[in-house]
Length: 557
Image (cartoon, rainbow, N blue to C red; front, side):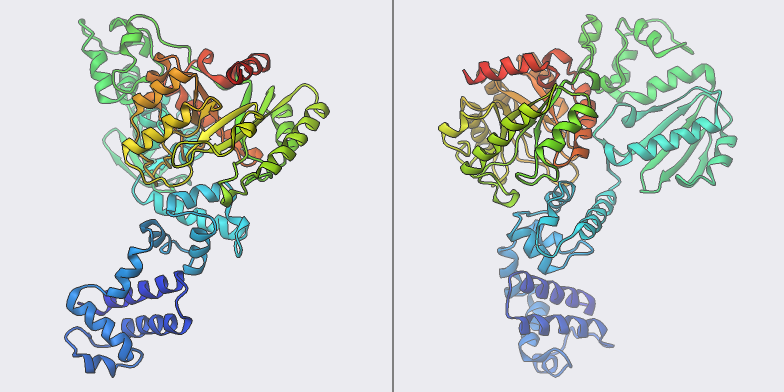
């Protein structure tokens, strides 16, 4: 074994010792030994115990640990510490900008156990509440995690939307008179993007290449026949496909849908189709209604297109209010009044649903029963003060491990509506997770099931659930399912929207906003909802103020 792996192991041991608050002298001696071993001009593998003890900076105690490592490949003390430390916490210690002491605060005081949860907490502005953290540190950690997430070549749609549109602006400037459009994953509004594809109706690819070589947006530009390829500043791959204008719509169609979708459409065309004048013509020849790009995933909507029963997909202007939001009463940044006025005056909405955290969410300043009543008094006062707008009294009630909600019935009945969500003990098998959710769904006070799987895209898969059983339970108990619009969540997954809608279950596009800027996340919720085929009539927060007031009253009744 070379010296560097030995030094890394000793360094990890010292970090874990610091994390678990072992004697500072022991921590310093192990950290010092790691530094010394790394700098030794000779290998220590093969050295006898008494030889190791004589090496400067090692000493008798650490020599024994090194000897054990060389003989067995591990250290008992290290393994004991790893056994009592979540793997995600160990991973966090590798993030630039945070050492063991900060990780200990993140883990023990904020209840965060992996990188995905840490990234989400940074976006919620929750790190600044912890001792030793400020806005600058929080932003540095967020950027470091984004860099790590990007290393696997996958990006959140929200991470690349701005740069992709800036690139399109450059392409438009190069080809002002040509046809051009996004294709692929980005045009389909996928939540995860691995490549940006742009189809251009021009064979002047040399012009594009020469113009893009000096681009401030595109890096490592190469030309391969009619493909101009490169990557954005963040490393996302780009493919600009230059085709004859006559072939443009054929290529745009072929490069937009998934392979099985494109093949399913082509299989329905009996006569040759060459140089179509539009994508609509391709679908017409296949005996199908034109399909929005976001619906071109597999064959899910082919049958509806054949029967001309495709939904009129929901859009931003359909939304009348926003539900599931957090204020300074728990872990939000803005006051209820600031959020209400922003929704009324800037977003032109009719209502706001406040859903601060319930009492079990101690890490997010969850509301005690006394504070719930105090908040309700404030909301009553604001509803009298603010004209042309209404604030609903909600709560994001933790679903406890047995599936019960976080307050006794006499408190639950005081809310206008309740979003029930799992935030703790996320390690469950499918049977336990499904049972836990269904118990909460069957609680008569549950109005909306919040982020059903707890997933964090690109960082935490979420607990496994039996989607059909959970959705069926919502149908049986008149419970709405949330599409959590935070681009890290987008949970309920769009792949299950149609099953829910077919069962008569309404969905709600909820921003889970922790500051006024968070309301704009509803944009990403709408994109996910459109992929799932959601339409206005089945979206809860597309109801008018009068309609949703009656719906909440009917549920409570």
